[in-house]
Length: 115
Image 1: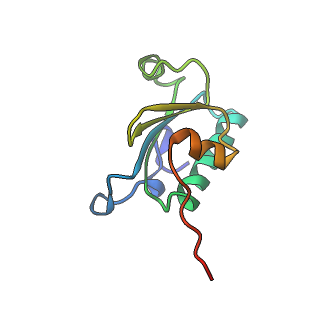
Image 2: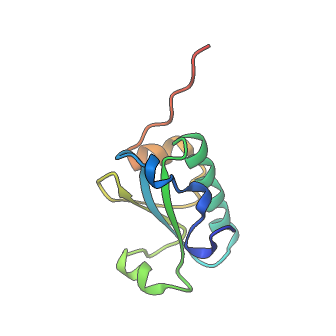
């Protein structure tokens, strides 16, 4: 995975293009389990298709950095911790239901172009 366990560069909006409505979040996973890998793939799709790339994401492997899971009070993985825009929210699971994930994050899907 590009960027290793901490993140991937393909989903980070360039500094000059960042806006206040960009999603800033951490995805905490437990190694490379199938469920964690599915959650990361679903998160990539969501950021690219629904949030138009307005994402700053960090991928954290709790096996390598258990203190971060403890600091975020994460008891189960995979967990997505949304830091910005406020309020902070946590979602546990594989993030497969896009509508439910967006609602839980307090975000809206990108508008569909009318033909």
